[in-house]
Length: 149
Image 1 (cartoon, rainbow, N blue to C red):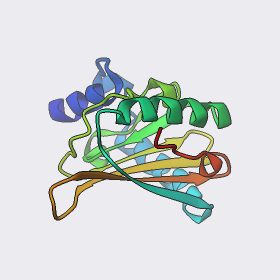
Image 2 (image 1 turned 60 degrees about the vertical axis):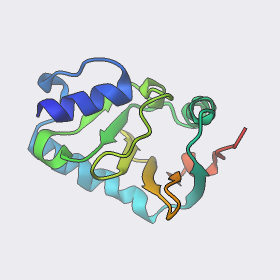
Image 3 (image 1 turned 120 degrees about the vertical axis):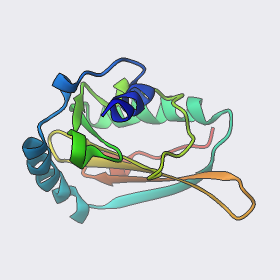
């Protein structure tokens, strides 16, 4: 549990307590509800992780927030064992979080209104270059473009 809370802290730049997490039962209900976005339109981008990635994410998160400002659930590895976290909005995510992939390599954010979903899939190509696949899905976020500048 401590490693899970530390991982969340790294994405949010603030300490998270166990009390802030949904129960495991609530997490499963939320997961089932948020899976409704899987049938919605999707936009996908693949980028190389560079020093300028943080500024790109800052701008991207601002545009996502403008299109849907709902609270957001954070889904990372071990969420089924520890509970999902609800944060105020996508703007609560640190744009400069450590882009090193965790064991799972995937972070997913779903809005509490079940309208939108953002998936970040970290991986390395055969040359060892760190890459990121971004998938924005839903009624609002799918329309937001990730720009490389």
